[in-house]
Image 1 (cartoon, rainbow, N blue to C red):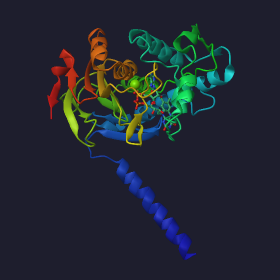
Image 2 (image 1 turned 180 degrees about the vertical axis):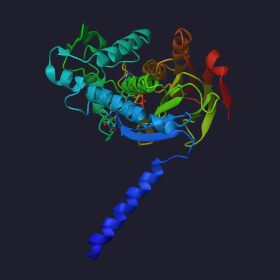
Image 3 (image 1 turned 60 degrees about the vertical axis):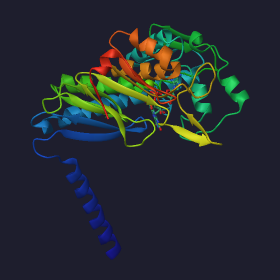
Image 4 (image 1 turned 135 degrees about the vertical axis):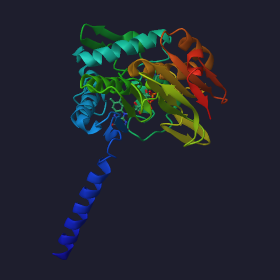
Length: 331
Ligand code: FAD
Ligand code: MG
């Protein structure tokens, strides 16, 4: 009896604390978080009387969840899971098609450095299920032995993959698209100033307290330190780093951004940050530039209209595009 009373009190206390944590200062921004796509997503609405946008924020999270349901390999009924199981053409949602189109655009622009057909390889390395391991060279050879991009066919809304050796994986781009969807939902509800942040990848709307949003760029070798601060407006900013999903074996650092040519982690960069109008594009481009390395990656950034970026090469050398130099304050 006493035990159940204690449990009831403990639960009531927990619920009350959670409710209090969800409240914000009167007049301050509305901040909400939800766990999505294996990461913490934070939505911040910086408006007077921000609480009136509670429903819009919930709708924005729900829109992101729909993208996860369509594009996650962890969801059995998702478009990508159905494609993996089908062995033939699958009719996908318009959203999946849109992501696929941007993926193919960035794949072409990067000469295949960005490759959304690397699912088998990503699975082999164990990055998809959170149990990474070093595969045998023969396994890697087999996993990159399919036709890849050439085997991916899009005909209207019908998508098919010629070879069972390949597997569609939108892990390098779909998070960005989900962020865009959330921003669209917020804007449609009348929100003018907001930030949607999914594990450090984000898109901004308007301003923060009447000034540009200030976004820190994570130092790739010093946890908790920033390389510099970007001042941004209605833009997306995405970082791909070799420190995000990684493991060490025999003193060698292995991470989740893979070079489609070798099947091993791309080793020319520590981190790449891309600023663009749309998060879906910035996400794919950051992954592509990371694989290409500082020289070819910088050439791709400079030849892509509307994209700016910062590259930290494997040796720590930093290079930036001219447009980014104008908005960064170094630390
Ligand atoms: P990015 O650099 O943007 O992308 C790296 C990812 O892209 C790799 O993890 C791989 O999936 C893929 N990739 C690797 N090399 C290349 C290449 N050369 N070209 C193109 N793509 C490449 N994580 C969980 O732990 N649990 C989940 O349930 C979960 N669900 C998810 C659902 C969705 C819809 C998405 C998009 C992601 C999900 N994730 C989940 C996270 C996912 O596993 C990746 O870790 C994440 O997408 C990597 O994003 P990033 O921004 O860190 O790196
Ligand atoms: Mg990416």
